[in-house]
Length: 238
Image 1 (cartoon, rainbow, N blue to C red):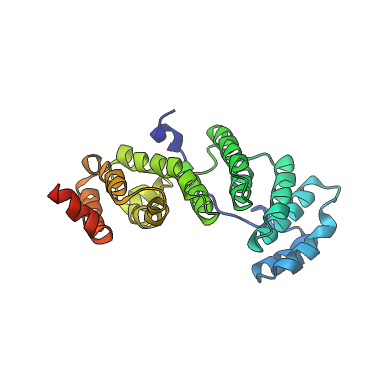
Image 2 (image 1 turned 60 degrees about the vertical axis):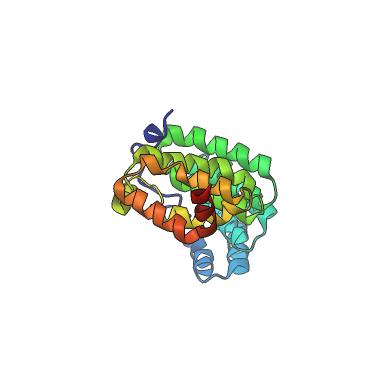
């Protein structure tokens, strides 16, 4: 399936939410308040009594709160277990994406990649999230976990998306759930610098030039001149 087709109909981004839009179950209101106050340990403690609740919805929200709070604390093993329990109750693309990100933060790269494949499978059916935002988030998680090289395929997918879309206007991209072009350039550079040399890096970005609109080409050329002046100068003298 082409990149453009995968984005059709998607305008939501992969944002975390403590509970479903329907509202907070009264039993979990104190735990939600603790989460919003960044009192992570308290949020877990207050949600734990409801992890075995008879009502599936209440049980799911309790696991969601524990998953969010333990993720904020960097307790990746516990967070994965909570997200997995939640996925069993709510097997959707959002929860698969969280399992992918938490897995790589725990150092389980292959497991994270497998969950990204599950995300893709579910998201193709539900069109729940923007693939572009999901891939950007996953690449960021890989980089934070010290595995920037493994982020390269996802960043390349994003690069090819900009080449297909051609238009780099912020509003156009936002309406399609695609990161702003400037943000993509700034955020991808430190990741790519860990796995590509200057020449490879310059070539990687320059691959977009012929396919972007005039504004995008001008922005990319100016950004390369500022971000990689030595590499650009060396290429011109060769």
